[in-house]
Length: 151
Image 1 (cartoon, rainbow, N blue to C red):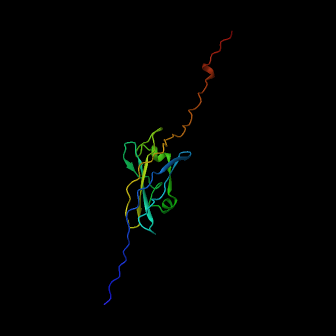
Image 2: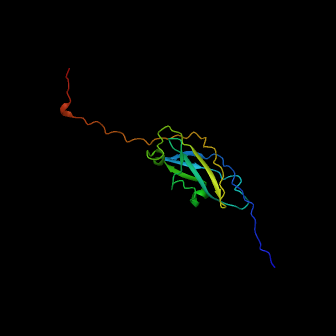
Image 3: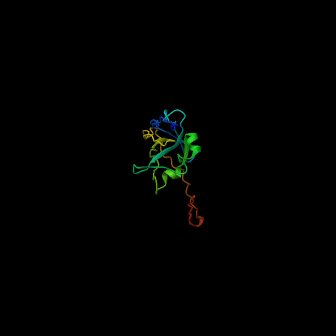
């Protein structure tokens, strides 16, 4: 009588990640970058997704999808995402204002799926930079109301 054969994989949680970096990379766009965890949970195991959370003005955290969807294979491979300024300053979601600090934390999940603890929040002092406003219209000069005084 033959015995069943079982394969046992020793897999653990991915290690805690370092803080992500944030940079103002082009007009009205911020780029978040990170390094994969030093231990993904086992040899030859992949990270299946990242949970990338941004702090709102009320101190709670939320994801920004699809711009920084950590389940998107392209974002997982690139270890980065780009966030439009409009998403961070939207008054119905994040409501960040000019001068507010952008705070991000991240964690990894491997294919098992086992999830790491969140990284410490980002420490880079990246602030919201508001888009320049269109200047108001130049005043219209009304010649009929202009007076001249001759000396």
